[in-house]
Length: 434
Image (tube, rainbow, N blue to C red; front, side, top):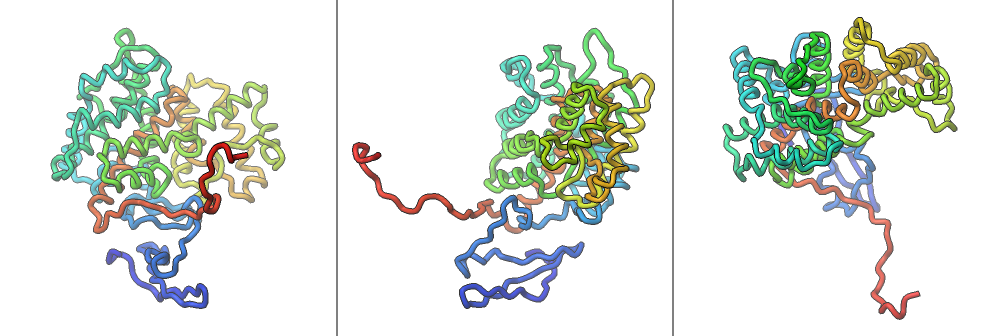
């Protein structure tokens, strides 16, 4: 245990008429934990915790969440302050290296990202090998894993090599993502530009073409930058845990990040904002404005569920949603934004925020609800929503990977199980089987 965990009075556990003393600790923000790392060797028991909802798998100094109070902090900084005053590249540096950068450090980091934005030219053959219409997340996971063959990773990384790998992944993920989109629609690739900032570069690669300039809208750029900040890390979620699990085997970092991307792809994780749009499409197809759908969603016997409301971690409100709502409103109120799905979404938000059913259950709009609306208003195709999530989450994944490999103990992840299959059986010849 690190010296940042303070010991408390040990817990006493009685099993099979024997008493065991288990160390207990308290973290910086008052989180209490019972150390069961020697439980099996001392007692023969393991814990059963499906979904790991009550298991602390590691110590981490990156992100703090208090779901009951609606608190999210990166390296101690409230997400509200970072969202208001910072930009994504600065927040990425904070997550990766522990402190907000100086002017010189930010300039050096930004230059490194710019210099690393072009992927190896031979990788273009890979894009040509995917069938047209391939899902961008499938392309992204494959291409990120393949980076290790173009940029080999040594078994022992020196500081300079590690910094370069980090710059490669933070920068190249948006290039690969934009190329994946261009491939999926059959348009020629647009290369990154050294004159554009991180988000502007990505949007230009997505939407510019040899026959059409893309007019960058400041409100859209700021909203996407904000979205990336709010998605940059979220403690030990499914994809981050996948990164730590794969990384604990000492696999190369590109394969490790590809594992995180694959975990993020699922509709219960990074695909949640996509589910919001699917719900709105369903309501629109049925000819409603959302009111009837809400009434059906309140019926426990109905199969309809209100997507983008409530959160597994946040029991009160999602602080990211509070921040994102303001920028969502800015985009939806822009002249020329006409979309029946967005009109339905605003109706659902209005009804749900004033309905005792949702208020009493604290089912407030979460970050997925507003991020889905922002991405749609910005013209991002629905199958690219999770890709945007992956771009935002990249600094967080890499921060956890760095924290783990530089930790005092790097134990390979190996959960236990409770076996519920058949007891011992003996082989029978096939002619004797019924």
